[in-house]
Image (cartoon, rainbow over all chains, first blue to last red; front, side, top):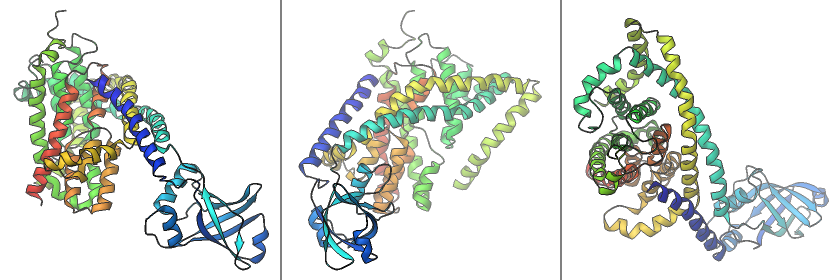
Length: 323
Length: 177
């Protein structure tokens, strides 16, 4: 199943990106090569003939609306550098120029590094010594999503490794502490306490096996929202379960159950990110979160048990395959 | 009650970290030596996870960068509204199992668009807190022990995620609004 879903995500993302980009081209979303009327103002009259000059650019609201095809915006003003090149004058907008969404997107795509929007302009029509009008066109923007999925793929391949490497420290610390707990016999004591509750969910795990202790620690850390303790304990629990697994590459029923209970875990403490994003408002969600997660955890356990009984999944169960 | 739980969750880790070596000493375990032996596994485990994490994260990132979320939201809107799920929360429901940072971005976006005290943000926040990044958890936990054939783990996780979305809508409607 994971094989198909994984491949489907990759293949379909190309399809979605292609459809989205073709739609953008058909509707001319980025107004490629369409001139936008603007006014350029020099600070001094002699700047008008200079090769480089700092200018103030104004785009009138009605001109912008005509160009962009709709959106209400106030008059836009911003600083830019006007340079005379062999192919005509070029405007380079300042880095902090406040741009409306469409122009901001064009800037993000065409000037990814410098964040300075570049416009080719027609020769200036001077209205007086320091002011002129002109028409500007921006570098054409095409195939935005195709470029986006490509860079997302490479960015996240890199990020995955950074993430795994950043886990080393926390993992090492917890696995070290767990080793002390095992050596001192603490896990064995803990297993005795939790096994009446956990054995019904993990009947394949033998009585008094340390895996039950690790599972209980992992699930409790999860409930308390202690992410950086829950993950190492879950991994440790998986390692204990793997010791009981006759197969090297196929998940056993208790492993699937542990995973299901981790993806649908009771939350007594809402995640820190929720509080950070929603602020004090997140307090109202305490009861709904507790309710949803409790029901989800029960449901996940039931669904896992039921799915495990399907003939297809029974056939792949490493514990049922004669060695 | 809530304060008690939060204080408990604040104290449980330091207590745990201090208690383990203390109990070990009491049981005459060479605590430092045992710690180092255990900690050594941290490196190999993390390195084991890498191929699984790369596979999952790059596929998820491609999918969310492709604009699929917007299109799927439009596509699923009528069906979802028929069963009483507001279309505004669909981006959160769709992205939550795929990426953690992506779903935080969606939540932040919704807070700015609808306000933190709105019905939609309450539902989205509940979904965010109640369900996990299923694909990431799968990669990390199974990757650590080199399990490639995940059997019914993904279907079970995704069914729980879907149930979480429906329950979040119901409970927020019933308890908060």
